[in-house]
Image (cartoon, rainbow, N blue to C red):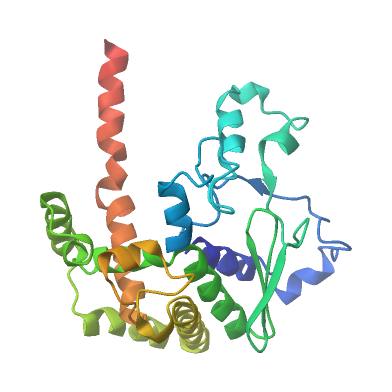
Length: 292
């Protein structure tokens, strides 16, 4: 999902045509500086059955130091740990290179290149971060969905079920999961049709731009589904790249639809919107601690 947000952010950053006369055109990819970040533990959040077996049997794959885990699963832990030893005043321009990885639009080192479909190219750097190029806007959105599923297929699957209030039937009917489903249903209950219709309604309210964004959402969904088909062939929870969790729970991948986007959005909105993510309660608690 982070990949989709990044792609949308790129589109939002494009200057309107009228501004071209006052803002000089960039001469290089870094004309306006660069961005750095850390995404612990790593870019990849999906582990296949072979990698899991190696971890469980002690086959040299652990995340103790972030270096001998499966590729790109924990290689940013050390960066994050190093940052935690610094006080804010110590994070100066001179040490930024050692504390963060580059997060620009051009990879420092290309490790892999793939073309999931004509018009779409996904390049990954040494940290596994995807850089997506599309011939069209929809091609780019397809690539975002494809790369996102490659990195987070099972997590994304879990989130859409949680957003639909069906987490317990997906990962297990524990008291905690049932309680979470009940809370989600109270916050944002939608039938699948109601959830899907929301996207169509928003698109109609926003004219040509709304239709363009809806087409992009459909392309994003197509990318997710294409990645699932590639990772878990024949719709089975098996395959060399199928998430180990899917096999363990015997969950066959099902196609993503517009409704699933609404379910995930409602879950995130409930977490950060309902009650402000507990920020008010935390502020009150902090005030009491200060008084003591």
